[in-house]
Length: 109
Image (cartoon, rainbow, N blue to C red; front, side, top):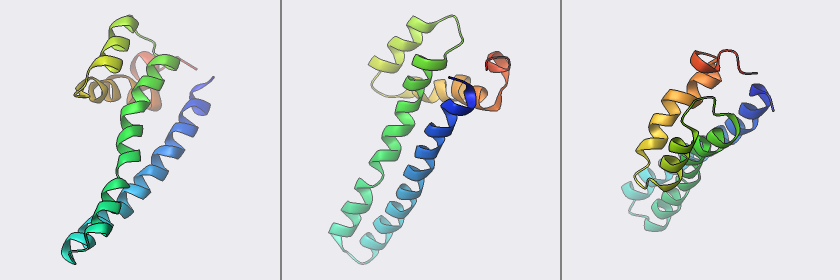
């Protein structure tokens, strides 16, 4: 699978979940301001898909597109590390450079 195909579907879902989270954030603010607990709770629940997807993309990228020399190490960190700091680092060191076609991903199709 080439870079465009891989990122197209992942980014489409990321945008959808970001819009849902934006609406959810507005619902939380309105719910808290008007003391509507149900609206605030519903808004809070709408943030979960974005948080899940942001944490899941590094695992999908590592499985499908990783071009480095430490595949086993990154796989272990991404799957077992609970605080998700490894996923944040992976976003900046691998996913975003792959998307921008820079670094080690400049020549990867």
